[in-house]
Image (tube, rainbow, N blue to C red):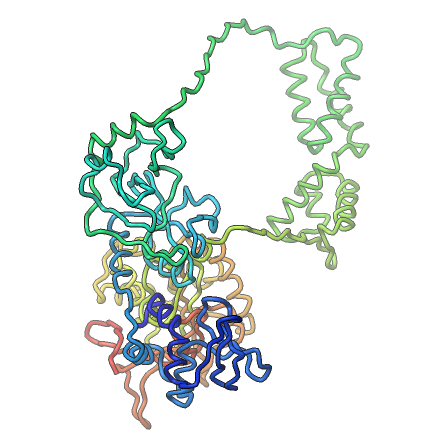
Length: 618
């Protein structure tokens, strides 16, 4: 399978390919234009820059494509040749040396337990992700995703990666430092060296150029990052030696500490609290003006509380705090007088109304009066004001909230690739947290066997957050689980008949088998609800679906709108003969493919004895 990094490398050879195919190829040194493979005019360029995509300024040409598109057109008359086959041809013809050691080093970073940082393209600045210092990114799939997007990667130094890094900004290590460094993992940069040691919490992050010693040495620890291989800065790469990280030699640590100036921070001096004798809480001196004072206090409470809450608080004050309490009968009469007037604070009541509508989406005025225990005239007044301010709208006799958009300005955590493989499909598509996969099958095709095979393959990868929701007899799918070798505690399961009402777990891998919809016109709404669940909890959701008698999905367009990957699980047929062991997936949608194909088949085989479904070689 052609990986994203190798594919990106091959795409960068598009000009070499065009020169090889066109003896009359011309490239302008002034404007960066070159001979268009279509119109043969010197009117083509690479756009966007560094994308490997050929674009021609001649109106009849426009976007032409990358090296794979050109190879299909020029060498294979637009035949649908897979990228993998074209890659083998291009690597051989153009003498492309793919950097296989990139994968080796990414695996090395994983083994070392490093957390990496997305870094700006062709730069050392970690300005892509806000708050990256506290974020963890330890999955190779995510790092590959960054690199294939053209950005750099950095090592998040300090405790998070168990690394203290010494950056020496000269090609020659200072002589008085050289004898202490030891044999450790070292990266050669264009300007110097990066020495990697296990985390030393006693050392601060500091540039020694700013201290009296004025040395070209920087200690990179907590809160700092260093750009690492295979990143490229100003066209220059970095290179590691073959050593493993070691504990920092004591002599080096002492040498560094002697040159670090740590400013003493002033210590706060706390004085012991003075013992104060608690005075009597009883309020005295209200003779002759108690009723007036209590009414004023009740009016203040009424602005924040409903009438029942106000009365409750006033009773506490009266019974506990007053030296001479008001008779309960008089207090109740006082509250009746207060109730006659609209005393609710409008802003407080607005918040209570909008909070309720946000939780319940809609309510009548009567509902709000009943729930909030407020006067109807206050509720009506607040609803009218909310409508005027375009915060609420009325539909028949129901009031509905106009929700604010939850705008965000961060995105790295929201585009994470899955830290595990999606069985059968990962070779063909990139899957991210929050993706929904729809798999369809006819009655009796073995959807439950397939669904439990998904569970089995997730468990085999070491996942401990696998969930299975079955809509058929639990004895059937649990028996299949046992036949597949699954054990108790391997996964969580539940039986039910309304999968849209289940609450997904955070970052979980969930299989719903199968989607039983009584009214198939509601399919779009059901998938919308499921996608909302994924937006809230992230993770991966696989939904097994029943196919129509004509072999299509119910509400197919809506289903494909929400799903990131759509496939049908089918039997192989030959004339009237049905082969229920040599099965296959018919893929009908790939949101983010690893090839240029959207419609293709993935051959599989079902083994009746073991109940296992495996990929089948054609």
